[in-house]
Image: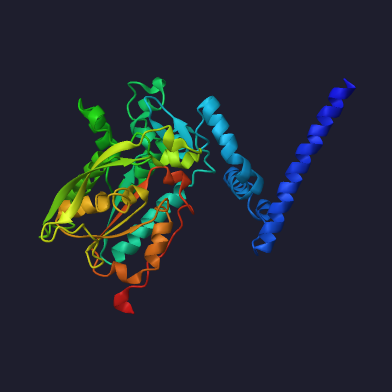
Length: 384
């Protein structure tokens, strides 16, 4: 008994010393790099669940000890438990999901955490400022992958209709009651999923958080039709052609897992894309800052467009549908606030605009980077 107690006490001292050494080294390194030590975040921010979780994650990411041990621990957990880490959720039939998408769909939202008024106010304020310049706003909320495919997440959801988060439905309903035009991709993708041929053309990639090329083209076509129906724009005269391209793609959920050697375990998905080319010179589609339509969005617009193969994403296909080039600002993971901050730094980009299309992924309603800040528009170039 005495021997066991000594062993336990020794182990406790060892781990306490390990924690102290790691914390002291992190504190010292941050001071030497003229950074504010992370530990001060605990006392400078309100002790909310969100802030404490962010502090914990930041501490883990900046810890030298964690960085050294994490690859080994992840390899062991994957080999023994098939664990892909905290950012990845394994579904059925090889489907993978992003943790934040799943949390957004399944977690009960604390009223104090769900800043509904902040979201609604930010969007309405943005629409008002655009309207003052004669610019229309079209919202394109991109559904989270598990919202459309809950049956690929768990067998308990087999036969279930797309379980839209009540908070998503409430916010969209409030915005529409205020006259905001929203594209309903939830209904569109659910209807497509119920089509007998849907298994051949799912709207989302199996290993990725993003939509497939099929889902992306559905979204672009829907947006183009709405713009024409509203009379906000008309089709142009630029002719485009499509070039079929097949490529292999390792999903971003696998990359986020950061398990060493994961690419040798999972085969990349074969993705068939249609690259948009100018009919006149066969050059890939390129934006035109002088276009009367500006598209704002996140990585759902980046995939296929700026990633491989290029000029094959949402913006290019929307331009093809409308037969005219567009202007765009794309910010990975930052469609709630960061993309509007980027617009603020580009005052000339709103010149001559008639329509702004604003895409953001559903989970950003709760987990958007930098929240939903009220960002002013840049100074009107005509008044400078």
